[in-house]
Length: 318
Figure 1 (tube, rainbow, N blue to C red):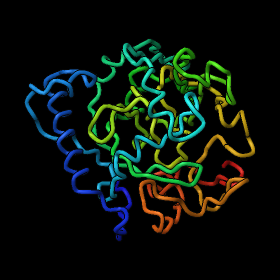
Figure 2 (cartoon, helix red, strand yellow):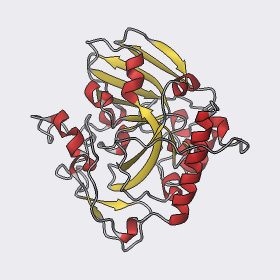
Figure 3 (tube, helix red, strand yellow):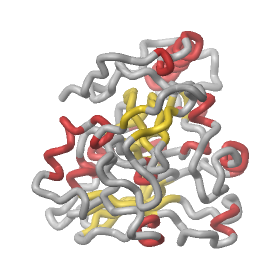
Figure 4 (tube, rainbow, N blue to C red):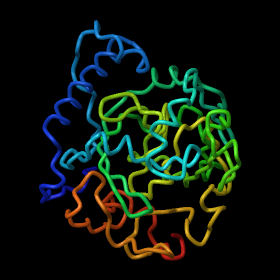
């Protein structure tokens, strides 16, 4: 499977050389950490560890894409548990407790259980996945995630044939999360869902790092979902529970405003949001005069995922 190549990259999307070099250095440090069996959480702080080879690049990574500068990605966040604006989560999220962390897997599986994050990471090979990320609010970025296949994790629980959907639940930590504490806007904890074939698709990952570093708290630490062909709100942060179900779960935004946020939420320039167009997107970190990018169906991953929606009316199943 080959990710669609972007033939022409505008100058505005070219990665700053310093940013790129820093990223490669940190990736080498992370690789050394994994080779020596050191946990991600502590390894980068231990500068005495030798530097090994780079984190393996996933064959599903779009290496030709220009990565968005890390500062832009880390300081512009949708994280409604902390704030409704984009600027405050980067500071407010630092109070979130992420250690220890465990993930419960249950529902329609042969082997339900609760797994410590360290045990999960020790059983999976971390790889670098450079993906486009498109927000439903019509802005986008390119992020070098570090993670592993969600499907591989689900296989360890041995899904039953009755498992048709996957429900993911975010952490409920109201003493750390102001909007959870105040029961603001959404019903907490945050819930998202996928069809089982979407969850098992090799493009779908659980990320525990980005830019060669551990995942920042405001970006979903310590473990988040990334589904690159769907709008960003589907990529739930701070996952603590995964359930395999017979029927589709009711996701948070779909429950709050079903006419605006569909269950599938595939990136589609032909299906506008009720209050704005989805034809184009603003590149995060770009200049004021940088032209908007034309949005692609399935965020440019159509060759890999369009078959999942064969014979479906994407205006109805938006």
